Length: 132
Ligand code: HEM
Image 1 (cartoon, helix red, strand yellow):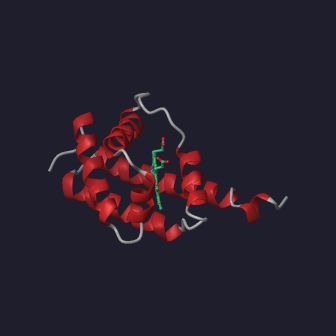
Image 2 (cartoon, helix red, strand yellow):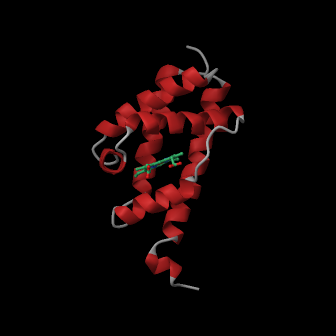
């Protein structure tokens, strides 16, 4: 097995990952209800991971606001266990396709982001924004 080397590899990883995500019982519905243009989403997430792994400024977006929005639209249904399932699928997909330094970086970076994203979601819930 080889490491993640270029954008094409990132696209392969992202496509396989979202195939699994869409079929997942617990987290699939969040994605299937929000995303209408999957080609666009896969390109965007390829930009995101290409920027993250190779330090290229391709991705222009705001994951924090996007996830706060997903939580609001779902009636605040996003839970830490959804992040756990997301990460499990991300790790399994990476391990099935790639091995090496970049593959490990993709796993570690996602782990770090998940804590940050969940905390941001939590802070923006109405019951928490009212507290001082
Ligand atoms: C570490 C974990 C995660 C990472 C790194 C991640 C990353 C991303 C990124 C980069 C986007 C694109 C944001 C944009 O520019 O529009 C996105 C969108 C999205 N994410 Fe996540 N995500 C994670 C976990 C989750 C979880 C746990 C859920 C659901 C339970 C979720 C649901 C979504 C949905 C539905 C969108 C589409 C939002 C929209 O287009 O309005 N994500 N995610």
